[in-house]
Image 1 (cartoon, one colour):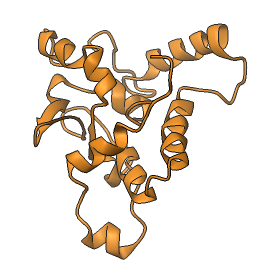
Image 2 (spheres, helix red, strand yellow):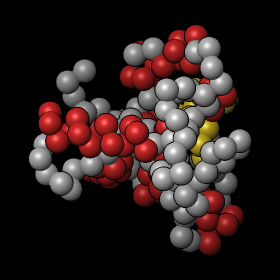
Image 3 (cartoon, one colour):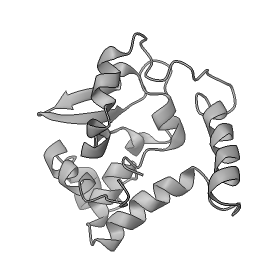
Image 4 (cartoon, one colour):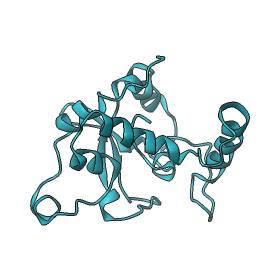
Length: 163
């Protein structure tokens, strides 16, 4: 809900994918090593939400003894690294959150997009954060990626209350 990442994008992160770019902590979504991307526009930088920094994400990364960020997740031919977490989340969600079969882990990604949309954030900014292609020639071909500081200001607008 704070990054807009797909489940597999989050599960396949390496420590080196959490990096400072122009003084801003970012998630580097890429296809290096054994990682895969859904499409070309999925390759992107997503600023780390300040709440995740406050909760200790950067300290966790710095103390992590393994190359992979989530070493307990094992690769599976079906769904890559996200297979076991996806199944766990589905059970947890049904038991503790909702019995609505349409509410899945992917619903968090929908909440990310909808929260920004309801605040009037430009669709191009939301699309870039989510790894969606820019449909127009102007933005898709000629426009450069948004700078991390611009994207951070957008990410900071995510506030679901209760924290």
